[in-house]
Length: 381
Image 1 (cartoon, one colour):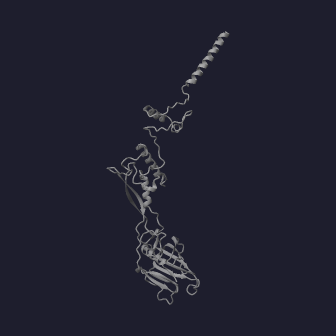
Image 2: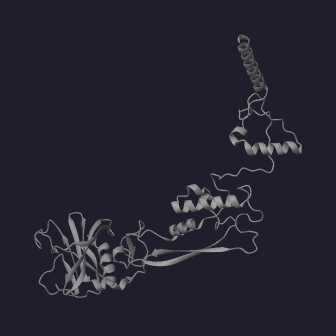
Image 3: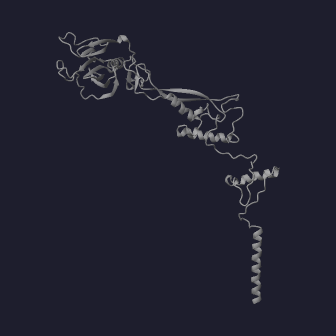
């Protein structure tokens, strides 16, 4: 019995030794063993092996030498290209997507609405100089902007884009366009990479811009933009005014010829105020408030109050002498119709020069330029 136990134990030891020896020379199935890569040569068998090697080994591991082996010479696999999406556009081969073209057209044709426009309709910007007959008028009094279609035609490129991208607009990922344009841009880029072998090669004979194509295609892009309505205001001429000097009021003013009547004519004394009218709802008044004047107005405001009327617009502009003039535009019901009152006040020295023009709203395209021209050209003496 003792000998049988010793025999079994001996057999287990021998079996264990055999298994250990076998594992030392032939690893078990599924064990991570390092393959022994042969040095590449120029024959066909080596090229096939290199191709299979690059298909199974990741790009990161393939670039590092195998452990316990001297680094092998760099090998360029044949007939195998790893495609990837470039971070920047291919120079000279890419135009614009349709979404980009629409945004570029909008930037080109849609102009910011100016606060003031001239009588001619042009925008009155920082280059405006007071005293001109092409006087500036608040845009509020112009008709609403109009909507119109604008179109441009672009050649279609082989990569599916249109036109020629500007040299300073090559980086399509940093163009400042909207998310919709950038998304369409990236989709066009992916489609182009898949369509062109190698992902970045330029098709021969096209140069990226429809050259060499016997039947070029074109794309017409149309957008709607708002444009300023034509000016309805009547242009001014020298015959529209008569210059008047008031020595007692110490000013010179341009009186509209369309207001010929002088209600103060024939009175025993005249003073710093000048009044002209054509009817009850068409008149103007100009005066100067002088703190030292105790004879005519006894140092009181010479213009009436307009009650609870709220101005529809207020501004401050320079007159021809460079003084600031505050202007109020008031819509006022007078004589059975709505009228516009343009009231101004500008100070020069100790005097305040005031002017007020009243006219029917239906005649604003005639009177508003006249009123503002007279206000800008009211000179204190």
